[in-house]
Image 1: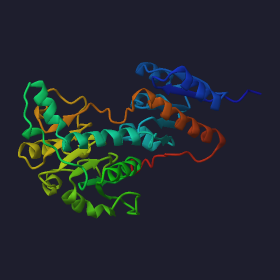
Image 2: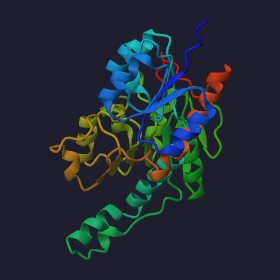
Image 3: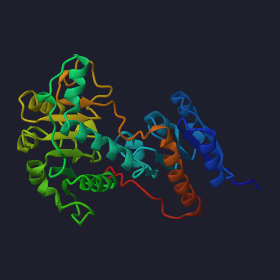
Image 4: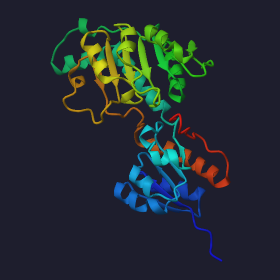
Length: 321
């Protein structure tokens, strides 16, 4: 009589040994291998049951005939919804929730930078220019933050915004009250959010419904004194329309961490715009402790997987989140 095959688990992440130890402690009988080499992931794929990683290639999924579960250390999984995952009985879970503090701090930093005109002050400093009128800032207190579809990030963001005296409004498919948010409207209320927001913060997942959601019409509804901040996915905002609105002064500025193409092409006009702050998709990074948050969440899901309990953060593959 043959012994049951051991669970084979592939960690496609640059984790440290103590993170692997946490995984092995939850699943002591499992065979655990770790690599960040994409070709190696493809080679190992046919024998693995579980993959934990950020960006599992379509080729790896095609070869992974035994694969039953992918756990992503990202919150958004638009880059993972290959046809093979959609069509097969592969569970997909995310690390939604672990990025909320980091991204919220990033958003707050951008709002404060714009309000206090730090983006202008830094350019003046580099040019050895003393120009007080150009750097006289405003307060966030009394301003309105708009957040379509507040999830984990939006909920933490609402608390932070309220702590500095901001008013918070948003839209949600099920518009139940959210702590620290003044108003939560149904999706049809997006136009109202756009009109009222001094800072429009995009934290939505990228789906067929949200792709290109913010275009010329939506930008045209916003105040010329408003700022757009995108820490979600670049394709949610129509980049050409945003650039045109900024050029024409129909928006005060934009704080962008994500873009339609990444890396952002060197010839993008966004690099030269003084009213724009760019960061290279780092808002969710959270520094060196990122995997100290991501791996315990995976381990809890691994424990549940082994005991047959419902997993947390399971993706509805039809909806895309």
